[in-house]
Length: 489
Ligand SMILES: Cc1cc2nc3c(=O)[nH]c(=O)nc-3n(C[C@H](O)[C@H](O)[C@H](O)COP(=O)(O)OP(=O)(O)OC[C@H]3O[C@@H](n4cnc5c(N)ncnc54)[C@H](O)[C@@H]3O)c2cc1C
Image (cartoon, rainbow, N blue to C red; front, side, top):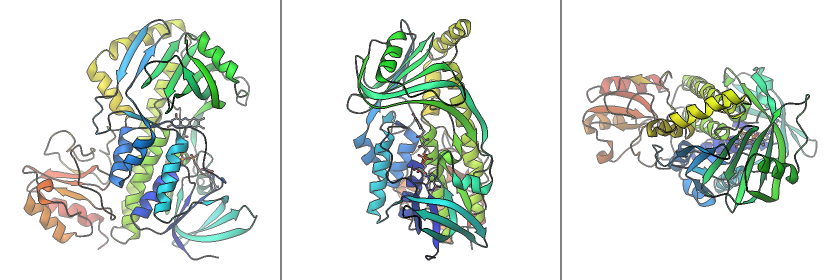
């Protein structure tokens, strides 16, 4: 039996790798294992949305993603003959007002290489078989490719092990939901004849949806629903000719060649009610799966990981009480519910077959998306920049400022560079800020006075950029009480 590790991360997909990088940045000891011999070579999740990019910015390596992807500036929806809507992403409330198009294989490569810079290697061909709970942690049984097993004592367990999660099964948590009764084709290849190349092209054809997503280097992803599910299993994977025939039949003049990946799939919509139990947590597909409409699955999972990491680090380092971690499931489960609802609505709209319903859908979309404000709202929702935690136990106080300064909101102003300890940023009158810093040096990040000054309000911004406490300039004592409630001593 090897020595105890603080955190065992099971699964090195995008979510486990994000968590690992955050914990490494915060100096927490962990191991990360994956049953696969290699990381994926598939493009799977293609979009990094604005909010995820903001979080990678705070983590210090957003530029690596930007260099490897291309900016998607919007989408156009047509019926094949007529344009229903042009949606612009340029007005998303973020320094990253676009969808960064980047194959998941590249996202994982960047994350794994970043982890290597911290001196951490993913332990591959290592499978979590089972685990048992004991006082203060778990004993996890890992099986290596050689067939040998190792029992690892870990104080915390992070199940980032995807839709069939062993951790979720081991905890006995139900994955409630359904499998949608329709079949889909997916193709990833080179496409000519689609312009402009920085837009998503969506055809709401009467026979079903056909969507094209740009990837770097003239590559595109094609997704199409091919009708009601037939039988129990999914359809056989399509051939290139099947995909080309479908594209032509649905009114596209584009031509696809050189496929990287051809697959059929079905959509599952499932979620756990609680993102873990005790010292074990679930994040990403282990906790929620849904339709790829909106491209939010991986983004939501990565944001689970960002949310969990700073809380785990503060508890493991003995700075905060373990109760801080109770907010993880409450906050992320509410986001998961919302993402599932939105993705389900988008999918329902896409797969309509009834001509009257289709006509109504097209008219409503044409009308609603004609209003810049509604478009702006839709783009912010997709980009996940309007996620907030109004009902979290970590949210306190009343707003004394403008938009983005309400407790629970994402802080919309600029924030000073993050450091290697997760800390709150106090923003308010200089005297109040320095008073809080002096009383809670481990919880308040030292911020240059000119950046921290806000004459009328006092805010405590969490390490992940959400407002935890919002008060008036004179609410220094209430802010101190907020921090005292979190602090271990
Ligand atoms: C065909 C397809 C298309 C998709 N398109 C999109 C899209 O357009 N947009 C979008 O947002 N999402 C899309 N997704 C979903 C996206 O890929 C997932 O949301 C994302 O991969 C979730 O990341 P994760 O890290 O939670 O899980 P995963 O990527 O599933 O990673 C889990 C990891 O855990 C490992 N593992 C599992 N069990 C064990 C165990 N017992 N022991 C050790 N290791 C284990 C696995 O090997 C795997 O590497 C798509 C998925 C598929 C399959």
